[in-house]
Structures are given as structure tokens and as C-alpha cells.
Image 1 (cartoon, rainbow, N blue to C red):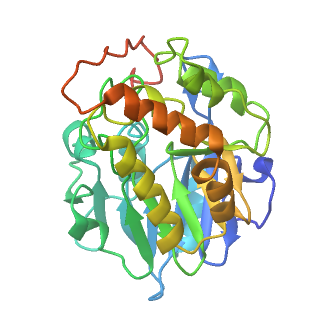
Image 2 (cartoon, rainbow, N blue to C red; image 1 turned 180 degrees about the horizontal axis):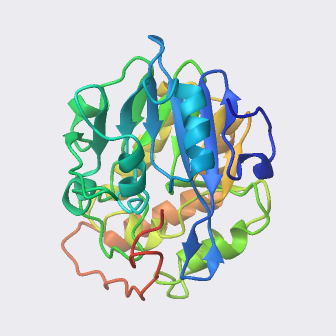
Length: 319
């Protein structure tokens, strides 16, 4: 049934129980065809004994066996929630092993419903709902709470090569654990610094605000490198909306652990870390203030961010 551990290496190719009822796994994912950025998925046990999968990873016999061991051969896996618009590549493989149907519902971002319509066996993927709907995001409450960042584009992020800030964050309330893809990045592994630079390669224009999000040490927690580039919408009020969302997340949600897709997990103290490293960080606050000044009242023109091709799998996918 997976193992219990607290080191980054423990989650590689093996589910670990981060907290009672919440399992997480990281697997290889080659970015730009040469750099292993890793990606992840989680399994959440609900109060009724059923399970929900958060995101998908490429299926192997070993991973299928682990999922089957946790979910009674998949019979208890009744929900699949695909949380990030650009984490799509493993959905066909996962669906082929655990197909949608009357007893297993799939929920995805608007982009998933467009780009992933069939699985690896050429069987149709039946989406039960889109996560841009508040009603859909409330499907598994009170066990799971979901939130989408405000002040940034979720339905159709542009440029797709670089704007990966918005995703659905999911809180498993009893496990006090948040599943997150790219919005937050916790540097558990030493390679994370190089990965952040590559992630931002299509979005860095010499802006020190973006470079600061790449120049980090092990144990640092930051926002996605695109945040102050193409991430937050260049519209009046957008930076304020994003900051209010951050504050509400840490006020309304009680959590200790944070699982991030590419740069590792934080075991304990995650809520306080977001408050200290992001919300109350003077440098981050100055970045928000500068962005507000640049945007102004929203009537002026803002230079478009030039995005170079960041090839990951299908081109814009990062998971």
C-alpha cells in the first residue's frame, strides 16, 4: 500500500502516505526532451472509504499495482480530478487503466475537455464536469476543497508555452495536505533551481522579479516563475485579486503539508511557509506593487511577453 516517508527520493515511482488518507507519487517527466522535471499525482481517501485521484501519471505495471493495492483493485477509485490545464500527457494512459463510467467520474480543466477526448486504447474519455465551475469544484466537499487562483487566466492561459501559473489547488481536509501543481513551488530537491530557470526560459526578459523566483535555495517556497511575467493578468485589479486569493487560501484552509508537481513536497509547516515566504515577504510585496504601477488603470498598452518554445512532451505540456 505504498510507504510512509519524508524525503524527496521516497516519492519517486512509489506512493507514500504523506498523512493518513493521502498518498503522493512523483515519476519521471522529460522536459525539452532532456531534463527530468518529474511530475506527480495523489490519491485521497474520502470519509465514505472511496478514493479520488488528483492528476495522472503515466501508468506502468508497478504503479497500477500500487494503486490497486490502495483502492481495492480500483473498485474504490470513484473520482479523478485533473488539476492543471497543461498536465495532460498521462491522462490517456491513466484512463485506459481506470476508465470513466457510471462508477468513476472524471473532472478536468476546460482545456482537458478539449484536448483529451480519448485514451490510450482509443476509448472515449467521458468528462463529468469542468473545474471552472464552482459547483464542480464542490463535488467532493467537505473531504476535498478546491480553489483556483484569482487574477490570472485559468480557462485559456496564454502564451501556452509559459503561462502555467493557474491550476486547481486541492485541500484534503482530514489529511491537512494541499495538492498543487505549478502555482507554488517548494524546493525540496537540489535540481529544482535549474528546473525553475528552464520553466521560465520562454518568459524571462531580464526582469529581476522573474529571475528571483528561479534563484532559490533548498527549502525555499516561491510562486511559479511566470507569475510576474505572463502569469498574473495584465488588467487593472488583477494583482490585488491574486493577493486576496493568497490571503484567503491561508486564512480559510488549515493545512500542514504541500505537494508540488516538479520541485518536491513540504512535510509540515506549509501554511506558515506560504505566509512567510510569499504573503509577508517584502520583496514579493514590492513585486506586486511594481506590477500594479505597470498595469495602471488598465487602459494603457503593456508590451506582450515573448514566449519561446518550451518543449515538454507535446510542446506546451509540463505533465
